[in-house]
Amino acid sequence: MNLRKKWNQAESLVIEYLKNKWYTFIEQNFTIRWGELDIIVEDNNSRIFVEVKDVDNTQDLHNYISPKKISTILKTILFFNQRHPTEKQLRVDLVFVKQNTILHHYENITNQ
Image 1 (cartoon, rainbow, N blue to C red):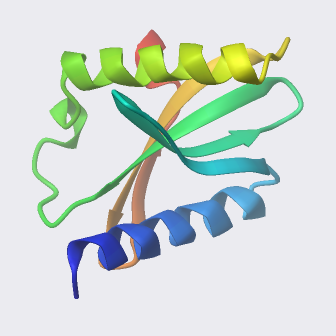
Image 2 (image 1 turned 120 degrees about the vertical axis):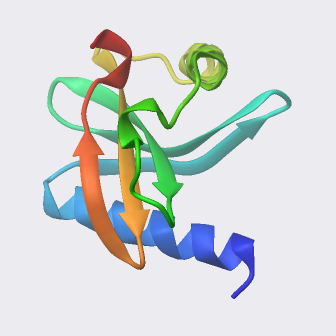
Image 3 (image 1 turned 120 degrees about the horizontal axis):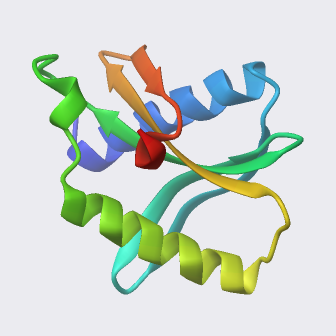
């Protein structure tokens, strides 16, 4: 299976997972020159930007995203919110997928 197809399957799985948790789907793969937001959803209080990682290895998931990657995500969020303003709180979540299974959903990774 090619890598793009694998990512698309992982993202589709996460979108369904989030919809089942009553999140409202907003957008997938919002891309600008310097970054991409995998999935954007909302609940009553928050706009949530979800980074999806399809992993083969489950070692050290806590350190899987570098500070540089988080910085890029935050800059991309600022750009998105300039185009689509909201009064809701902003949150970044991280979801790990392995072999078409959700391994873990970390909420609010930038405030921990």
